[in-house]
Length: 257
Image (cartoon, rainbow, N blue to C red; front, side, top):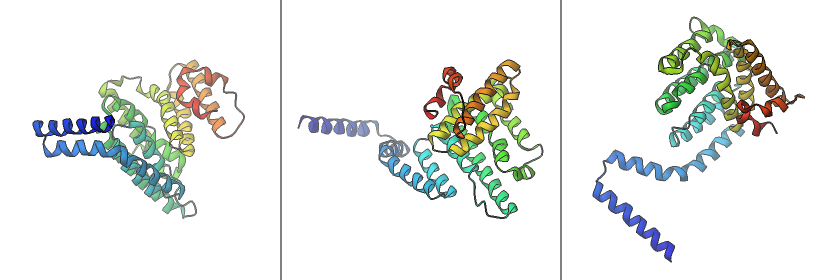
């Protein structure tokens, strides 16, 4: 009874505040949407899992977009859904030109999605740009035929443009080195989303990009760590003792047990 009275009192206070403040219609919509989000999220997640289980990449991405509309500031979610869509296998039995054209369409959609997510990234916009710079190269590694459909300069030119923007925003000239380290958190987000295939593809790109680290000794150690993680995820024998002791690998440890 006491709890019910407290609930009624809280509702009354909330209603009174709305009457006194006289919020604009847009503000009321925002309040209503925040109230509805916890109720809507479980249904959105269920629909996403159903689409993933059925192997429908377009439907899964659409469901991911619904989830991100409910939690627009979840940067890791934006990146995971975009990469998952861009790297989806598609119809492997289709003729090569058709398969490559479909991969190109998915890549363009994923890029546009992440570009739009910059509006919600806040202080993490530089991080988003670093992850975005991985996408074209990773997609080409996944579907080599894509290389011929990219603008002049290919994947490296696209990456350079986003990294230059990150520098302009304050990342500094070391941004090209930093992105291979940043990839660890992104790989963890993909694994959390159940996308092992995408995680392996990003790892392969991060291993290649470890060559950007100017300190040769550091680059060698980092590449070795990434290769050990990749081997483990592939089901190969790998000594993970050094990985477990490396604080930079902490986001991945829950997925390496």
